[in-house]
Image (tube, rainbow, N blue to C red; front, top):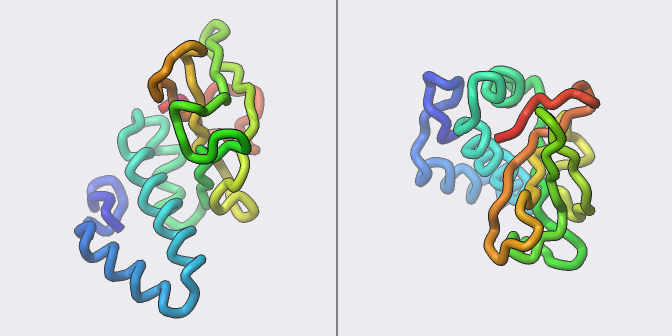
Length: 145
């Protein structure tokens, strides 16, 4: 809802989005969790991406053609990005992702996943990158945010 009309969104305020989530939760609070996490966070993340990211992931998402998932939670660290163990190692122009995610929001319906991974193994800070991983792009370095 909060993505600008120029990028394909509704251009609504965060307050309007909050009201919509509150109203949807009156029927089922799990719908609000899924729509807010996936709808708001993924849209906010994807709109910061380059033209390729916006074209291949954000535009189809906003058009209702693709469903994203959100993968930060890990079995040993929950949503603590500093304690995250999933790593991304650069190999040439690509990255190799290695780790385990759990509780991935909207995974069962997703066409692609926004995956959080650390790029500095020894960092005590939440330094890393976000990756869009899609079934249709296996073996291709498409989306590093």
